[in-house]
Length: 210
Length: 210
DNA sequence: TTGTTGATTTCGCAA
DNA sequence: TTGCGAAGTCAACAA
Image (cartoon, rainbow over all chains, first blue to last red; front, top):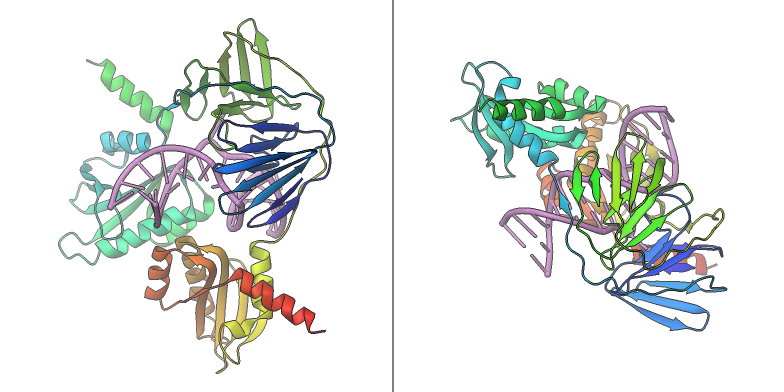
């Protein structure tokens, strides 16, 4: 099998699973690894079947050529259209929960607004602490270095606005990588690790009181 | 089908393709979309087959429960171990090419060294321009905002070293996102768009002269 | 083993 | 349509 597109790749001869979907896309799987195929062609594409050879051409001209030496099994089924997948919360939910539980950040803290607008994008949560000082909060599932950079940019801008400056920063995440923590604290940004299960539990508990 | 792990997801009843690999991992594909399954379980995991129900349990306790109403086809094959995939250059190759063609950055530029070390990681290329001023170059396939941040951190550190300061910055990529360009230029970092094919061609051309 | 970065990423949302 | 951030990301590589 040979792929030629943004990169070129070659796959030696072996026994594999070939899947052709209704939209013409092709997947080549081995008997292990993760869900990612060894090689594939994403739709839209066109499959040309020649004797002993399949040539799949993508819309940008990239090609996947499959040389077929032997066929152990060949079946085809019409699956029809698929009803959608339903997913439940991740990061958005963390922001919901924290917005409703600002006391986790400190006594007397209150929410000013969510998605507080700045010229370079919205800050997740804007709060005031017990003394009335503004605090910009960035919420992440996993706190990494780029999240700290993002919050830093917000703080830089916000602190130019004399109406709300000074603005402090809080970096809140389920998990904060050591490098991100070091960078944040070096910049005077407080790090808060959020316990998703506890926060969800507190939320349930509050609901159960009524 | 129901998944319960970091998130919960539910998939309504429909005709689908189920794949079980040799390592026990499970993939659930619909008849379209890309190579990503609707739902899956990565190895290591354990598959328990009960009548009308499969329960797949991952090592962190996440579960994928598949309710089977009807089987249209059921086949099994041993594929054996797989020889590896061979890929050819992407970003490393870009760095190679630019290292050999510093004249693309300006007349009289010369390479000091590749992977120039700093306390927070190596700078892709360190050059001197025609006037002898040091220039740190970050090479990316796609230039995004975090690449600019990375280069900014390098420049901050390098400019503290009186032996080589001042150090200028160049952000070189096949494609530079507008936001990354704005941020870079705001920080005095020059942006250079690299034409991979031309650079490769120039390289070939040089080889053909001999 | 752990962390970091790139990807033929894919996917979803919003402008 | 396009751009951008997140992903149950995956996967390769370095520390």
